[in-house]
Length: 277
Ligand SMILES: [Zn+2]
Image 1 (tube, protein in one colour):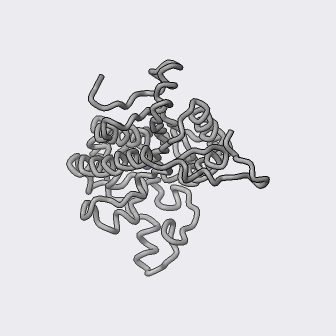
Image 2 (cartoon, protein in one colour; image 1 turned 135 degrees about the vertical axis):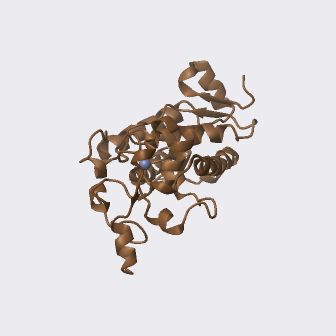
Image 3 (cartoon, protein in one colour; image 1 turned 60 degrees about the vertical axis):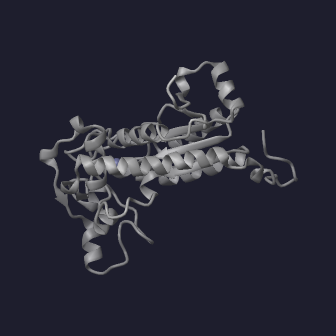
């Protein structure tokens, strides 16, 4: 055994799962996408980042926190990338049903703490809905851990890049240069200024993201399907980003284990019946 007590769901037996449930383990489910990230990054970018962050986080989780990692849900909601070759996607209805059914299996196995680690912006609404559906059905903590919503390391990237470099920009390219450098075509990296940059330059509040963003297809942001300055990326920056987000994730996993589930005990149905099944 290694020094940390995390393990992979699929490597266990029924007794092994029951033992983890008896120890009140935290289940971690990586969520990603297989979709275009331009010509400099592979289709697996979001999956590589999700798995890399989870691995780096597990190495930092305190050894007295039992963790079990589920097989990643590699394919997600990628409707905005449908016009680009190689993108795989589930319909929102299928993705929601799949995620809720996986969470249901976790709950039925006796685990009551589930951390959804999501690396793909297009999955945000899916994560919100699935987490709420699972909570409505079970006395269960379901954490919506979208790493890209964690505060970034101070000064790591210009504010403009953090705001507008939405897809295949410095952030993702840097983490890929650290996690899977053999998959990055550095000769194809570019500084891509897109629709969000243009609208912000004109002083508009309206834009693809932000307080009141509009729905967009990737080609709306830029014909290349990417936006952001991948030329700012380096393996050193990627290492710093992964370390930062993994430390936040490890802290969240510890907090999820420590969360007092009796805070959910007032959940009752309309007739006063406990909704726990
Ligand atoms: Zn991505």
